[in-house]
Image 1 (cartoon, rainbow, N blue to C red):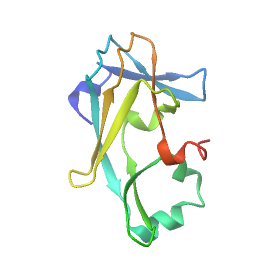
Image 2: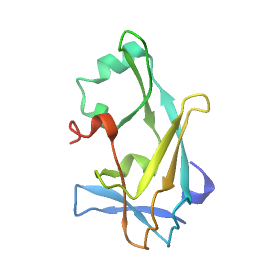
Image 3: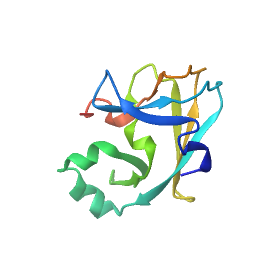
Length: 127
């Protein structure tokens, strides 16, 4: 996790959408990097086993083989608390080579506003 996320730019709170969520602790301008979070990248086999668990709803896709097998990663830190929206105010970029996921404001985000991302392929599966 970058030093920028240690409560300075974002914080976890109770969400009106679902359980807990990530909220802006200060005003965030569009394009502001909210944080970088380390990833534990799983093998294709471990990803397949994880599909039957609740934890699978919290992983990020890293890549996909030609045969359709997906490799996922578990993100550590506050990004795991981001809730889904089809109109997100933040975007994420998975960097498999650096084993991290970068969260960036896609719009201006006001202090106290929930930071929402589009789960993409997981949108229909999200808890």
